[in-house]
Image 1 (cartoon, rainbow, N blue to C red):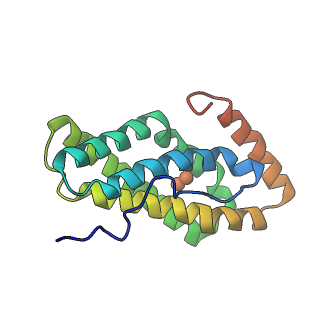
Image 2: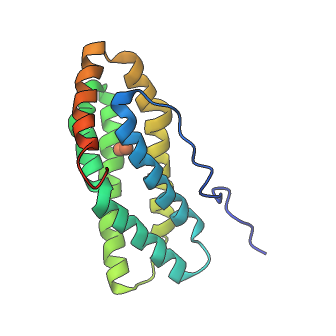
Length: 164
Ligand SMILES: [Fe+2]
Ligand SMILES: [Fe+2]
């Protein structure tokens, strides 16, 4: 009998660390992204489950993630080192490509060819890296003025639906 993948876990197990106010709107989005990621990782047994999980990924992308990526690139890249920028942009580009593949698969009702697990794993790893590595680094390295400016911008984002 095939065992459950190591990554298989319940959606309640996605608790994230407390953030500086300037980064809270991003972290709030991360909760939703992780829910979608875990669903994709766990949807391994039936093709219909994988299509549904990919559909959730596309839905979340259109609703929130597309703009989240744009906002992170606009607001956080100026606060990042070259190596961090490279990781962030590489992940974002890969996930942009995956969500367009997912959209095609969902619209065609086609076999996902492993995309579901791949996209879930990539999305989860990206969010975990931001929460565990990138955001704490920015919180420590940025000046109070930079954090205040970031907080001003993210408060405006936070007030703008559909994040509200
Ligand atoms: Fe990101
Ligand atoms: Fe993010």
